[in-house]
Image (cartoon, rainbow over all chains, first blue to last red; front, side):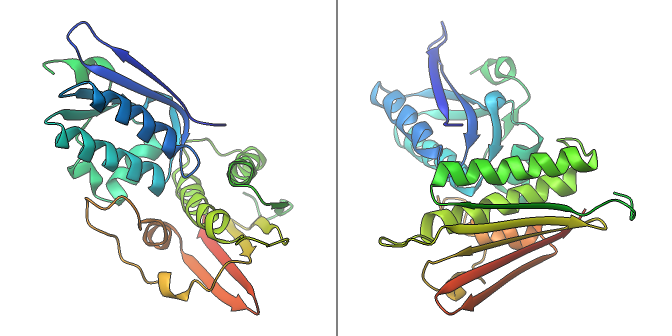
Length: 113
Length: 139
């Protein structure tokens, strides 16, 4: 299943980017494209809603690292929300959970953002 | 999985990236169904993660231009041990086998390091013009 990515903006100006499907070597470019669009519009505050991601591989993880670099390069901030068990396992295995503190829900990620 | 249960076996050939990845995941879904394991079953989840890493590499690098040979894939589970075998026609991969986990800022290069940590055994051999990968995990 190809990765689909929807982006919405909250009333407080946070972009919520929501990929759905497998965030893997086939799907990663779609997330990169979506983040590039968000970054074009000024200093971004971004939540990636991982709730619809069924599975992540190292290339998918690379696209999240790329997102972090782009967003920080634009003086913005990134938060990850609602990763499933497999995504959390991969974050921990690669120790990237130290780089991406994640939130249980999108609502939690948006609190105080 | 009881010792009196028939071994689980799955075989496929494929050539395209997304098609191949979908087949790999579906084969693990079929193994889950066959053994009554849940999606949250950790050993099988770790195996599937490693399989997607090696499978993604094979599908990305294992079919250089002009290749007619498809990727060959076999999955077998017997007596609580799952074994996957993949073969491709890409360039030799010896140089990548001992790659360590890169720094946090690196966007690539984690796949084989992850697979080594997730599996009980990651085997590789060059057989003529073919790469043969063997992934083993006790469930």
